[in-house]
Amino acid sequence: MSRWPAQAWLELVRLPNLFTAMADVLAGYLIAAGSGFRLSLVGPLLLSTSCLYAAGCVLNDVVDRDKDGHERPSRPIPSGRIGVGQAGLLCVALFGFGLAAALWSGWPALLVGLALGGLIIAYNLFYKEQEILGPAAMGACRAVNLILGMSLLFPALGWELFLPLLSFCYVFLLTRISRYEAGGDPGRLFRATPLGIVLLYLALLALAAQGLLKLDALYFLFLLGLLTGPALFRALIRPRPPQLKAAVKMLILGIPILDAFYVAGIQGWPYSISVLLLLLPAVGLSRMLYVT
Image (cartoon, rainbow, N blue to C red; front, side, top):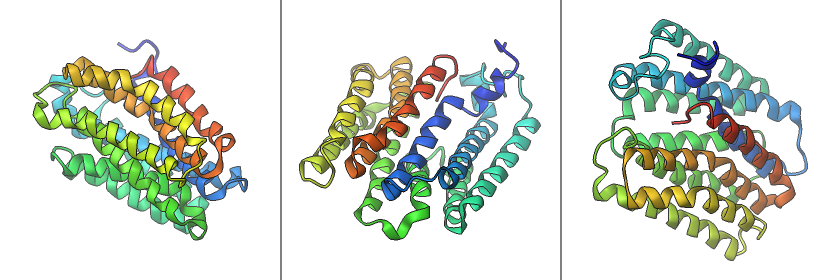
């Protein structure tokens, strides 16, 4: 049973994760805008990404309701705390609000929002169960989410448009791990996944070492390793559901740090603090609400 009436709804939309989605958009905007920050422009984008992310979480639980009935019976829909019809109406409303908020920021943002919404639907309805395309679709969602923040200032960007590819790789790898958090044998392919994340960290380090990113970014890379490293190591040594779930949780919570890494590397560390602060509510709420 819920500890308070709204808990089931907050669980359904993965409230802690919404702050990681906002971190993507805020980072994308700061990478492009720097000191030209305007809340009137980025505010609707933050609302848009929150609604679209929440809609994807609700759609995920609607599609997985039978599977969750066996693997995660305490979740809002299989436990009966929220009806399928109620969840469906919320999903449609969230998609509508998300796209309307994107339009508020302009046509470029709406086009990116439509692409993001399409990827979310495609992942949940068509690709989720596929071994490679599922994680790839999820990674694409995060990459496009970062682009959503950049969408207002595309002409000002150059090689920075390469950064969403790094987010794609990060989320692709964490999604590969999440596929086994409820059970199953990860096999040898899984064991390469945490190592792939280590290689990604080394690639981020190389960008700073080559001068493509400011050295300010290294502070955040160290923090990212500190947050995710222990859980990844335990998952690699003992790839069982509790260890895998913990690793996925830490990797999701690490997304604001990765976003702060980008901003610090392009604009300097002072600009990244607002992105990093989004980690605080995400971590705090994750102690009460699940994130995977």
